[in-house]
Image (cartoon, rainbow, N blue to C red; front, side, top):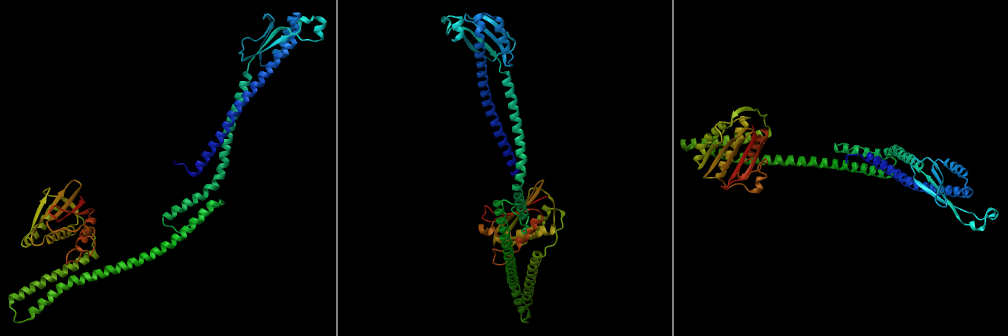
Length: 456
């Protein structure tokens, strides 16, 4: 199955020539052998009749010397093995020949008394048409067998010679047939590598010439289509970039507008001299919180647009998660959300960027807490094995629709009324920087479970 087109053609031609020559040889040898045997048997029968005709007088006269000379003359034939001359009573008058040689056949002829002038002169008419005796000519066909063996060898040699000559001649012919096809294959491979300025020739075969012309026309059309596609793709990139810029500007304006409004309102209150100091202090605290919120929003945008190169160090994942939970437990328990920490081991040493990983886990935990609303539970679980580690965050919130789960890590996509939509996008980037995966699923509480898994 791995033979090339040219080799298959050569193999087919060689098998065809060899089979035709061999078939003709077998048929020719068989018919030739049959023809030679028939002619050989006819010749032996003729010799037997000839001997019978000449032995007539010797039998009549009883001249065994004469009969012996006749037999010896016939034995000069190479294929005659033995000659036997009998009288009418089947008594052997003469038996000449080599008895040790193999005998393939026998020609028998009766010795008859001829009617003619001799009979009328020397014998009475009562001898007419009488059988005087019989001659036996024993012969061998070894010469024919040897000749047929030589003929068979000649046919086999001719079959081999003609097969080789046919392969040599057809190989020269097939090169002109296969060379254009190889050029087409090479051109197709170059096109697959992205080279569209390839041109191929068709050689002297009209069908391959038409194929080459169609191939060149296809490349020309493909180059035009590629140029048009590239132009369209660039336009799409520009449109997408403009859309992203628009979404970015809208999100920034929307997210910063509310804190600025609160800050402006608080400043207006602080400016009034009749306002009590406690109220002013409250307004100042509001302004500080909103300024921190604006700073966090800007920092999220900066981290997303200009991520720094991660710095991987050894750290205890269990200790980092415990510290993260403790920092946020008191604040969220005051809002009705309970945080629970579970771990499959007391410590888990991993190679990671601590700042990136801590910020990513914090985003997931804060999202889970916010999803619980005024009351709920959030479980943070750490799993460690020999080859990988996992952190799972499960909440009892309202969950996320199945359609939204497919887009939950897209930049600027959010299901909340406020927010930049960059939190989970940043988390997804951090997880991929650590060579891990992030999986979202609905849990038995109706909320969302986020599982991060990465190699040790």
